[in-house]
Amino acid sequence: MEKLSESAERDLLKAIESNPFIMVTDNIRIGRAVTSQRLDNQAVTDNGTAMTVLIMPESSKKAWFDPEAVRAVRSRFEAQMALGTPPSIRFNDLTCPLRQARVLSHKLYHLFDILRAIPEFKDIQILSHPKLSRPPGFHDLEKFISQMHMLRLRPFDESTNAGNIMALRDFLAQLGFNVEDKIIQMTLEMMVPWIGDQLTVARLRGLQWQRQEEPNGYDRLDPFIFIFGWFHGLMCLSSAIFENHRGSAAGLGFLHSVLILCRNGFSNNMRRKRPDYHTVKEYLMHEFEARVRGLWIQGAGKSTLAKLKGWLEDPQRTVDDIEALGQRIQQERISKQAVSFYEIEISESNTKVDDIFRNMLIQNRDLELFWDLRHAIKHGHVGHMEDLLPELLVFFSGSKNSNYAKEMYQLLQVMRHEITPEIRHAIREHCFLVNMEGRHNSFYPIDLRQELNNAGIREFGPAPQGRTSWEDYEKICPLVPFFSKLTRRVQGSVKGIRRQSHIHKVPAWEKDLATLMRDHASTELLTAVPGRELATRILKALPTTRPSAFHISDHV
Figure 1 (cartoon, rainbow, N blue to C red):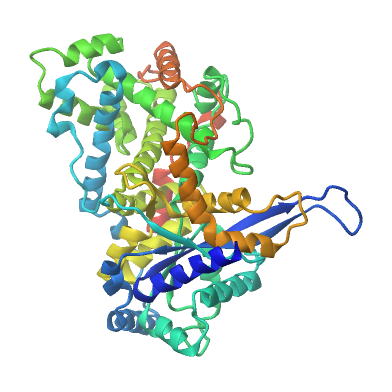
Figure 2 (cartoon, one colour; figure 1 turned 90 degrees about the vertical axis):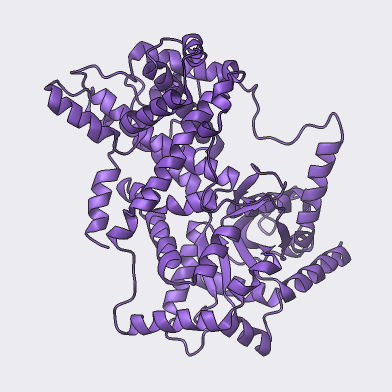
């Protein structure tokens, strides 16, 4: 085993000689059980740090190994810092009309995708028209397979500054950056992206700030760009959306729908203890898809999916009719402007406000944001992911998730002012997503890859019941990518072996959507009924967009 690990490490060192690379770290908890506990023989759970190295293609070398461009950017930024006038994100950067138009156009096609996904509608020819299909974005990833290696994990606790420094230096030493010439080359001629969850990058960035008065760039951690992982951002977004619109079982919030679907795992306050991400994700996707189906039925003036199908198959129906209805649904029922349009309509018609309907509009906006970000991640729309940064900044700021609001701001700051255009493109191209399958819809966040590697360490490593040590786990780490690839290949090629899954129930997607649609129709959730009021103020949805926008405009 040791010889195989050493061979994998030699392959890694050879790869980074000519290619730029990405460092990905995460905390890992490893339990070590004992068969018989004594005062000197206790079962323990220790914290360590695991690292994955992703190799970028040689074509991206110019962006990361361009010493003159790197020095110019650093010198300019340091000079402006010394004058007290460093470039920073302004409110106008968040409200760029061109970016907003791209985002709005991209989101529109989710409505057509959901319409095409209805099983009974798959044979409707008009829905296959190119005008209803999403055009390419300004930066979409091509299909590729990521090249991945793992370093030996170390028993350093990331929750402390000392632990982070020890982990950083140890991992650099494993990569060969522990001799003077290599350290000088990295400091003066390279920029190295470092990916992790919010806590990891926040601590490392804090160390970078604390060490700014050190005499050399290596001690100041100048070569590193710390970037949060999108998987943890997606988890935080899903929990925040559900908690903002939780409501009560008696009301028409998300908790009501959860009870209708007989789902478990939503009882705890997600701001204190988060449930399984996949549980929340599945519910939010079901809720949004059911609402969009209902809005299509309502917009066409029909009452069932069967009648909507008849409307679509009408010989007089044109693609422009469908596109216009989709745009109206988006503008009046889902977009950020939907609440404003409703309030204008109320003031002009002199009718009473429907608080429940207004709540529904806010919920639709947030549900679409989650659906949109998840779709962009899965299909490699990295340009759209960057376009969503201002919207995510506003959402997290308004929903009082200050940690991720800071991360969105920090990434915007780096992308707009602290790097070259070539590095900005390379960050989108290589530092957001990985693809281990080589399909157009098999992308996922880099920090999720690290979580899977952590699971691989536990799965392929020594049994926790034995008298294991950190050295036993260290030996297996360089081989985890090989074992993971081998496991996937065997599962995919041998009949009778089912892929591993966390789901332990029979999928019932269409059944759950039908249940939600019936509930929406019976409660008139998607219809404005003048004068309806919420039972208590606690049921009111948080209007995260407006307060946070004003707050941000006062500080940027």
